[in-house]
Amino acid sequence: MNAPILQAKGLTKRYGRVTALDNCDFELLPGEILAIIGDNGAGKSSLIKALSGAVIPDSGEITLEGRAVAFRTPIEARAAGIETVYQTLAMSPALSIADNMFMGRELRRPGIMGSVFRQLDRPRMAKFAREKLNELGLMTIQNIHQPVETLSGGQRQGVAVARAAAFGSRVVILDEPTAALGVKESRRVLDLIRDVRARGLPVILISHNMPHVFEVADRIHIHRLGRRLCVIRPQDHSMSDAVAFMTGAKLPEGVQTAA
Amino acid sequence: MPADMTPAKAGTATTYEDGLHGASTRVAEFHEDRSPLKKIQHWLHQTPSAVPLIVLMVALIVFGLLSDNFFKATTLSTILQQISIVGILGIAQTLVILTAGIDLSVGAIAVFSSVLMGQLTFRYGLPAELAIAIGLLLGTAMGFVNGWLVARMRLPPFIVTLGTWQILLASNFIFSANETIRSSEVAARAPALQFWGQAIQPGGVRVLYAVFLMIALVAIMAYVLRHTAWGRHVYATGDDPAAAELAGVPTRRVLIQVYALAGLFCAIAGWVMIGRFGSVSPTASTGQLGNIQSITAVVIGGISLFGGRGSIIGMFFGALIVGVFEMGLRLVGTDPQWTFFLIGALIIFAVTVDQWIRKVSA
Ligand SMILES: Nc1ncnc2c1ncn2[C@@H]1O[C@H](COP(=O)(O)OP(=O)(O)OP(=O)(O)O)[C@@H](O)[C@H]1O
Ligand SMILES: [Mg+2]
Image (cartoon, rainbow over all chains, first blue to last red; front, side, top):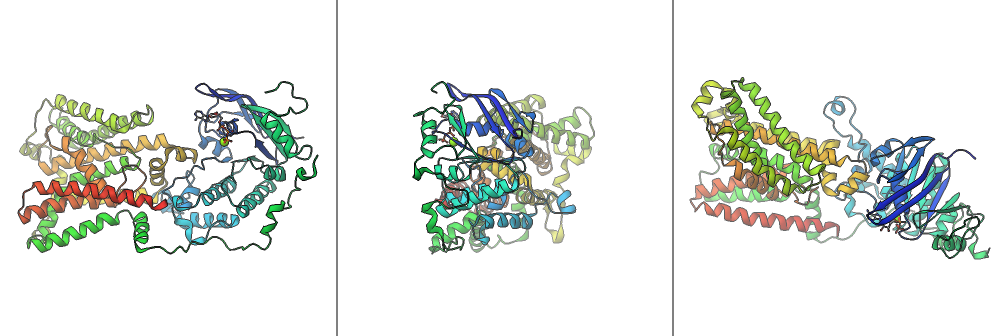
């Protein structure tokens, strides 16, 4: 197997007295869909936040394509090609869908209007945003300029997923991307995740939906009490095994101590 | 492995999704039947400067009917002249309030900057142009300190600027030794300081340069806030700073830039003050009143104190409303206290409307 594209060793993150990450290891292989499952509060979001620069771990190392990285902000991670949909979605409610999709990487008008007067290229951004949302089938075209706060929770999630899928260039991270979505929209997101993999990009998917996880994941990272308990393949285990591992009801083979 | 737990093969729908076969492929469309009130709410949500514009129109019509002298070019140019300083301070205040902050030091920065420009020229003998440049720079630096304390030390803007307001105003008195530079002296030795007090007189109507400056600055900042990435970042920072940070906005840098720019606008207002009043005075009332007046213009202008909503054009209308009320009530001949009475009522009205508009998403 090829070397991991994104790897973490011994990540620890404490919030006051809560240890959200406890000497946690992590590996993402090129071109795979890696699911992360675990109980509420197991530290899944903390892990991906550490990987995406949203929190700075107290200790531990992260390497991207073999090179050590230490992101201090999500902007740095994004510049390195890691695109993330956070559980909280990270949208500015009063701004439009198009503004939100291009937040922090706005397109400017060609020529002097862009270079000197720094004018945004609204038509080009709207067109792009419209295309991406249509791919997800979430929105009518005329709504691209409506403020995000007037969207339903699921539509907002759709916009966030579209943003990450459109801009990711090395790794795409999705923290519960289908939690608020309907059956049809969830299906679109799963298809989109496969599309992203087909483009050669690895995807990290956090989800509590076992059928979805077992359907799309190549490997499943089971997170328990702030650390990686084990990694399983969906072909080798049943959903009930996975649930038993993540809740501590059962120990996977080869793991010694009950966590 | 129990049969019902067999993982579904990639690409095949799991059972409950079979219902999706033949599902409508239409994308969501929103044709809710909205009541007229809801429609107004939505329209105001998109165009936050509409409310102050309507109030301004109504005020103009009412005062036009009540007083024959109201719709005269001289009256209108006097109104613009009266609001030129508040208008420029209002730009500074708008920027800060859009980031969900507040700047109580705008008046103090303006007065201190004007005193610095004056004293550097008269006490230290610098050429007036250089003194102005240094004054603008120092005003920016004062704003930068506010921004640094807010963004880096994470102190509440209200507290930071309450502190710097006192500090700057006191420094202003200490530095100037309470000394006013008389208008005639400024005119004789450093006319550049009074630049914005000059006027054009088309058909005998005096319009101060300061008025053109205010309008130009409002127009420039309206463009910057609406049509540049930086402007969008200011809104995003005020709207939800945590979300903006995750979405890739360097929120702390934006905050520092906003406060520093606000400082620059205050210093410009300080320069304009010399033109308007002629003299350079550390006791100019702007030091105390500038804050409240600029916040009033911003609030009446429909800019949300919670940040992220409103437009600078609204602030301009807000400042105009105050100017129109003052002038109109004077012409009508009422007790001037009615001005404050009505402006107070208008502030409460504006905030009520803001709350109502914000419910649009609920
Ligand atoms: N900003 C924070 N401040 C304090 N404690 C935090 C913070 N963020 C997370 N925690 C704590 O860290 C632990 C792990 O949280 P995390 O959000 O990573 O869990 P999770 O696995 O993503 O859970 P869920 O499935 O509910 O999303 C929790 O105990 C949580 O209370
Ligand atoms: Mg989580």
